[in-house]
Image 1 (cartoon, rainbow, N blue to C red):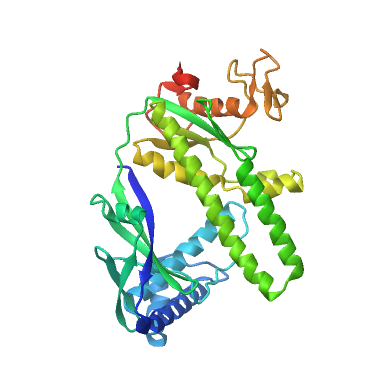
Image 2: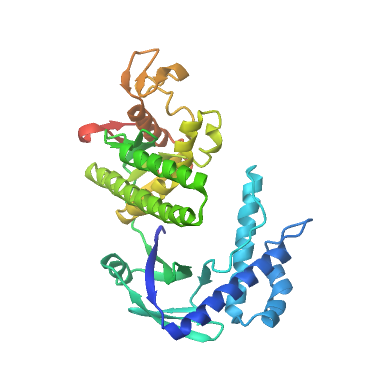
Length: 387
């Protein structure tokens, strides 16, 4: 069964007298995590088996730290997970070095180290359990009050003198029978273009990112202590603005799918987009390296699942070169924003043509993610193409 996973971030009201205990827990937890990584990071072979690493780390960490046993197990599990992630990177010919965690990196919590209550929580520390109330907004209240959500894990974070709990919750999703697919093409000039003819411009986002990039360059050239503080503040502001734009665009994409009675939203698989653009100009590479393709896809994915829709990914090969009308593939078909087929003279916006090709790949059975194939492709003005 499909499930909806969400992370609800809540600010904690921590009693002043308990803050030192929590900060000490952060330090000891990350020391334990780095120790576990050190034991697992062998030159001849990296240890990713949790049972093997448990034998090497559990009793030494019980002696050298005041951490509860469950925190030591949590640090061991996290060490195995991050090393496994690095090994996957190596298999994909990507760079990855030995992880090193800072003293106040996030702490992984579970049902044994954290108890979630209505408007408060209790969690373990090196000096007993701490009770903390929540500072909740309407969005957090709506999620936490939903009886269908089930608590799974959480992370405790410390930032700018405040403590936050990131609660991961899961509930079942009711996915509709696949009948209609809508393709979505992502890009730099247009954030997204759907096969229904909806264009989402990226001028606001690109302009703001260019301004932030210029400010960062100016601050880096000065290098003073105050400039570093401003640099850090700007980074957070840029990320928040980007997330705000991406959340709005993802909501509009899902609404477009709802309006056209779509059950499947299809994207290109752009996992390695940054590696594929090394031959581009520096200015264009900068735009791509800052552009959160995967983040927008993730936002659409969970919003679509809440609406009963499936999100799938197809191979990006030839989606921008193929003529949707006659199927002819040629690199010269596309020239910037314009697409003119060399065989049938079909003329159309290049991004719109690509979005229809993405959907067509699902209809023609070229997506590995969906067994039950849909029969219709959603086009402009609620028209459909049947296969």
